[in-house]
Length: 90
Length: 127
Image 1: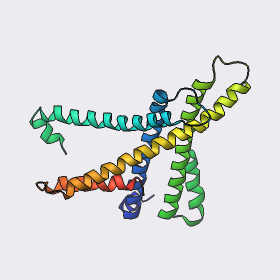
Image 2: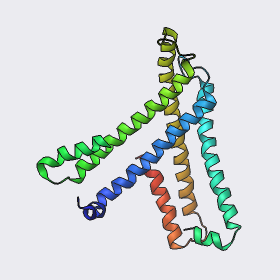
Image 3: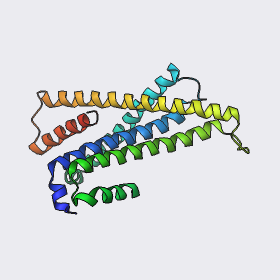
Image 4: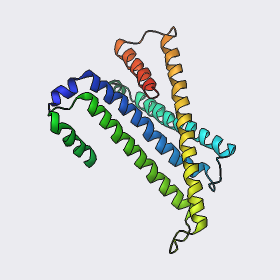
């Protein structure tokens, strides 16, 4: 297979980027559903009641907040180290 | 990815060349299959934990009913999480766009490009 030809194709390149992004989204949804199920779901009933649904929504938001918090704080600690953060910011 | 491998050979057999359109379609199918498998795997895990106590000689009626309800609730949960995450991404893109257009000191070229690529990436998730 002509790998040079495949990676040079801008249409395929774009496709790969878009699908990769979609896949990252899907993976996160799988993960958050899993984690939030443990936190929010008691006994599965005939429908998803509003309290459980709210818990799920809050859970997703707080999960993303946690991820963001960790990234920000990591960046802060690295910035405090001076020159190391300059070379790492790319 | 055995299925993917065999699809390749059967598709290329006649023409000797894979056109990008066919590749893209097959990749999409494989991705969809992988996602369905992931979903089922997690659903099975969760519903087994919730519904099956000490495992007996077979799944009794109450266990089966519980599993059926659990499946539906898991799908509801998945959809809720998907919508919530989507909204959050859209909000983040709005904020990023606001930041870019605000009267801030102009970032250097490479940082500006990275900010824009973040916007495009976020937008790509719900196209």
